[in-house]
Image (cartoon, rainbow, N blue to C red):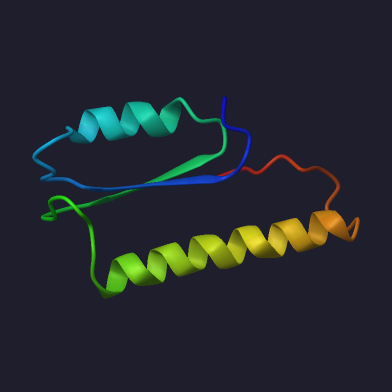
Length: 79
C-alpha cells in the first residue's frame, strides 16, 4: 500500500496502457494525482510535463516541511 503523495503521469495515446487503466491506478492510491496528457503517447514529456512534475514536487515538499514544523494540522493530503 502506498501512503505518500503520488503523481501518476500518462499520455492519453499510450500504446501499452489505456487511459482507463491510468485512472484506475490513480484511484487506487489514496494520495494520488493523475495527469493525463491528451495527444501524447509513452512516455509523456515536454515543457508542460516538466512544469507539472516540478509543481507536484514543490507542493509536496512544502507540505512535508510544514508537517515537520507542526504547521499542518494533519498529514493527510487532499487533491
